[in-house]
Length: 459
Image (tube, rainbow, N blue to C red):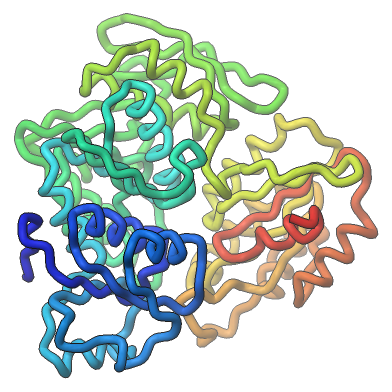
């Protein structure tokens, strides 16, 4: 594998530079004096920022963008061997790294790399950690899979030993990392276009946990069904968090306010108890915050700073994000695209002021829709009204003979009315004509369904 020498900057070309993670890596290398160029399919705020920092960005992907001046090519799992820039890289014999391999090498450049993993909740928890570290004046470097308002983006470049990143299991990418502290939030079936079954996923997380050195620490959710298989034969310290007294960190005396924001007593193994108030809704965020407290204790951060940061944290873009109101109708947007995430979001929404809860859901990928069809149907039943948009294909093509209509039929089998529209215009017109004062509309999915709410609000 090609090894970067951060003391000898070179010319690095990113195929797909506008991605949320790729753009962050490019920005870090720019700050280290590297020459950066790359391509993406369209202009975005992320590519505009890179251009302003000195990167050379191309739109569209052709062989002419890569020449002998390039020393290294970085690409993501979404880039296939028939990509013209990938082909050109091979023709020129240029060395290459995957996004995950580059991120792993960056981690080795810091004394205290922290990796936050799990099937769900990575971005929110990484953002919570970011707010706690910032409130504690630790000057961290942050790589977040979403937009955090307090840093006005997804990346922050600091001068301290702390490097915090999300660690995604898809294509086993997190196995290229070098963490000193790892968090595992949850482990469930997902990315079934890559993994064969839950046992293969558990094995991947076990290998990820095994990357920790003997003086490292694993913070793990005690509610994970296959937890014992993940922690088996680990040589590092293990801290468990959850909702029972046998955990190292657990939540007791839980209550929720009128917006669904949780308050609880955090109890440590040593018996100390502190009151915690959150600025984000749901039991799942209480669970996430327990992991953050465990991390803060390892880093010996000021307790009051941690409490204050968690109370003021109001979430990241597209995570139960309040978009606005229109004629007494509240519009929220959420990134949930897995049945467990949908259940968590809609359960949290039950505590948010409303008369009717309407979920406008855009399934994400054909393989995920087929793999979890019945689970999707059951999770969506928590909404009073369900509206489906066409499946967002992302990296896939439709070879499975499945559509949102298939999901609609599954929901109707369970005795619930469900509507399906072929276009966002049709969804927006229906909502304008049929929503009433007091409705809570949640646009939901990992695609571009957010546009529905934004179009209604005119933003």
